[in-house]
Amino acid sequence: MSKPSFPLHYVIYQYLKMKKESSIKDLMQALKAFGYENVDESEVLKVLMRLELNGLVAVSTDRKYKYYIRLRQ
Image 1: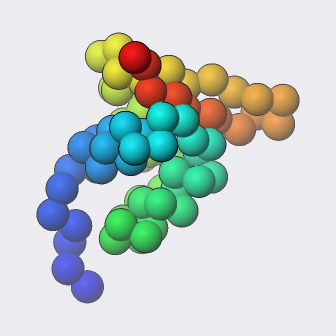
Image 2: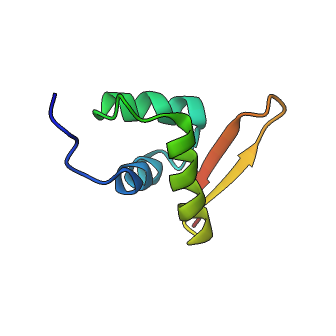
């Protein structure tokens, strides 16, 4: 299988621009559909932390300790 052509942070940001908000579960499913089958949740969380520090997204947790991501306007 070929390697995806875009960096992970770009794909996550573009997905969130399209959806405006997402749960981590939905984001992981979308990444698998985009060709990132081998990406685990810890790697995605590291990318989300970088995006949050740059002021592009906001990550919060719900009652079940799962992550919820929304695009900052």
